[in-house]
Image (cartoon, rainbow, N blue to C red; front, side):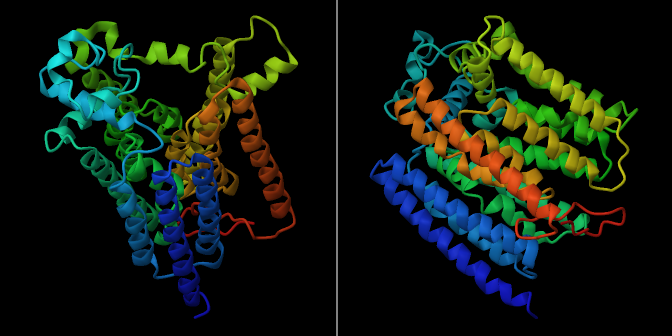
Length: 449
């Protein structure tokens, strides 16, 4: 009876999230990035309170309300113009180019070969239009083509991304129930301001990658290795980063999952193979432009370089060290005995979180793919990081090495402090932050402090 009364506080928190959504839309209209960022950070605090309520206090029979607020949070945002990113215009453009029978990896949008496709609505808003071919992998291209055959409007493309989110949420609920966990924990993904503003607001294709990733988790849970390999490959062919969790989904001595993964990757690129090495699109240029090669992209590299300024320690050597570390962790997880049904989810969350923190992306939406894993392994510092990453938008107003270092320091220093606080509270057997484990061998949740 006492637990059921928590539905009212949860509903109140949902109403506050909607209120801040309205404020955020108003600030977008006024083009006030600093105030918008502050609003989203406040919204993040409300979101974390809702997460705590669902995890610690428990709110039974509230799934319908959770899903209703998730829909309401997105309705107003999806009809607003893109504000935080203009990537969605490239999505529509790539779909249009393919519909004209042209390989999207061949030409930059400014190319004379595409002059007949250059309109007044989409083409002028494409970023890097004069020097960058598309960077998006084949499954993303198939989605762009399919979506634009219905409509080439920005609102429709956003709606398609919300459709992928709906698929992800549905599969998350099914996976939660199969593990004996409360379905209401899907709130961890569905109410996060990052998913609202980046998918309903900016329409990022990462929503599709998340949907395929969750399908991969589901097929892994159902012990369907071929489908696990196919769905994880599809996620990778939308955005490359889901490949990081491959070792977590792999079962020792199984050949079907890696074979189907490799086959899907090859088949995905075949329709675009005439572009040769051009199928990589702008990826090499992006690595150079975003500072991945020099190392300036990585916050940890910046700190190490300031303390140890040697010429050979650049972005390439840092990337090598990161990949080595990830391989060591992945190898350890791969050959570690799994004692519970959901251990693969814990391993996937470890790899994804480690990758995100060490690569320290400039763009907040690159943290979103971790959220489906946090539904099962709700680690509060990572949830905080997913919301606090909006700080990075403020530095993009006057992007310099100094402002980026300042904002990254604020972001990751507070993240480390929260890790320490979380650890101390667990040591003292206090429950105010979370967590609840994935489940035991029988699928029943185990409370942990």
